[in-house]
Length: 134
Image (cartoon, rainbow, N blue to C red; front, side, top):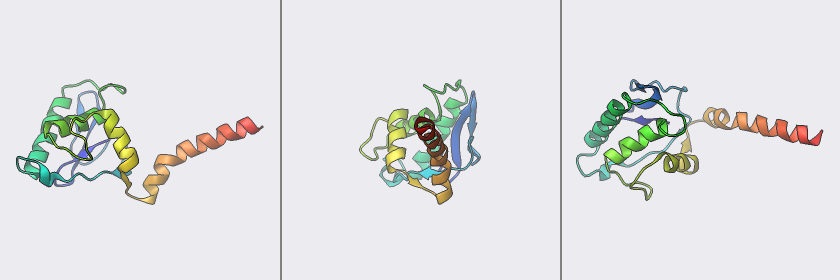
């Protein structure tokens, strides 16, 4: 999971002490997106958005990556909390809220993104069903 600046540059927490902020995400191109209206930000919209992302990037360059507790979802939540934005009825952001929000409200960016995201699970499910039937 990543967050883009107002100019469209993707940023994501990629591993221990590493934040990608040049548009290349750790696991390839994005498959889903959730657009947030930044015009409601109290202190300047795009400027406040970009400042909060830069601060989150700087903070996460000092952190060890933990797959369960401090990960790319946490990085995005940190930025959203820093800018104090309310969107989709959420004011206090965390990785669980972001996970469910993107899963249920995010839109796929392409058919390839949909296939990339669900084909492995579909194949796994098919194998499990076949094994149970045999």
